[in-house]
Length: 298
Length: 298
Image (tube, rainbow over all chains, first blue to last red; front, side, top):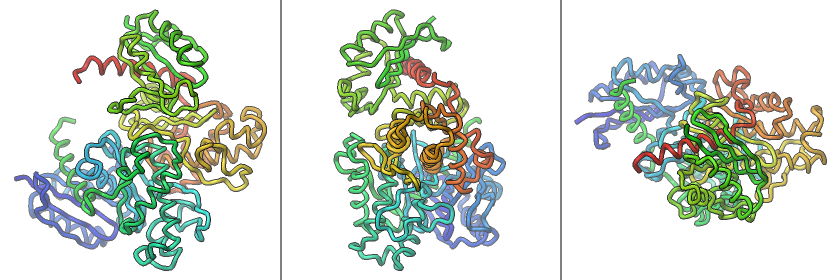
């Protein structure tokens, strides 16, 4: 039996798994993200123990995913300073001496949802996590989208909601950006309590769902994914999803004539099919892909 | 020598061409778009005269491009009532008895720009026409994007620009939508004169370029095309493009660390490489593709 390494590299924790050819988890561990000097040896030891055939990484970003760039595989301008410009892909490849596949954490999650989760059988989807930040992964024509860089859909601008007491948001880069207006920390800053503590009938949820509905409507109108999957901590509030669907329908206002819309988006804007396993499962798929590619001629 | 039919089907005019295997135009004609009963026989006669091997259509939309749908190949909820629910693809296929490829006019233009124009050699681009309406075509992984339907990027919502005397726009479906705020008719309605007549130093251009910059920034952040190509009548005002680039840079505010951004987007937000021939050239490429596909087993 062959083994594959999967790493969900987050800014606060690293989820590591060894999985077999059938996708079954053999070992798993979670360790806090400290500096590369502290964290890398632990991770390398974890993956070395089972002689993995390849490794897949879904990493926090921004990442350089341009295969022609000298900094390919590096973490770019992250606020996690010890990791800034760290050659993540190379560090693992050079130590483990196996093929390494790398994508953003959210592209990995989107890939897993498209292959094995809520969007199974579809050629495209958008996966968005709404939590400490807002990030999105995009699958089109069955493959993760990179393009110029990779999606940073949390930073699109949205129209301020009337009555929002904090209409500029808290993003240090962009006024009116989605992450600055609808992430967990923005809820906390606006109302003084966390999303978890905000009661379901609090007007804050009307505002939150309106911003996330703008995300959904704009994504549908821009690149038309076949499904939108919303995950992350803020989405744990189960009453939020129907509010987002309803407001997305209002924003589209009948413009997109499609059964998915006319039936109320109930099978279109959904929660992850793999629950909290999308990210690590996506990393596993990246490992499989890296092995497959390495056995092909260039 | 084989011949191919290319049709750029617009709401006001139909551009018809017969082109050879090398992409040279053999014959071309433009006729006004009236009802299907009046316009179809003329078009069929045009393409029949050269016994084209296949036909490609870049059509006004919305179009049903879902191959599994019963209305595949039909025009959908268009304001051009005689064409609503017209089976465009089938009407040509059944009469000409050749393979017919169909996509939106803007996806066809985007395809031509990606294969032969400004984005030649790239795997992705966004093509947007800014004129009577605002429409966009998206190429990702080398192929036009359909997804749930197809891009309707003209209808994304944008943040009202301070000082805009008409901040809700004129779209009958969506307040704050790009088309309602930045199309030719919205300029006319806001200032009483057309884009062509609006002097270069008129404050209207600050507003116009700000809305189009929001389009560019949001597209970059959402699905990260490798190039954005802006065409259409409004873009004929040559001073507009640098204004859009400058405002897009301000909106991104350093968030996307990429050479294309740091060099000022001068090679990233550009005009069409095929000038006004993107659409008809794209239709020709769709014809070639339709012929190729028809000769393959299903």
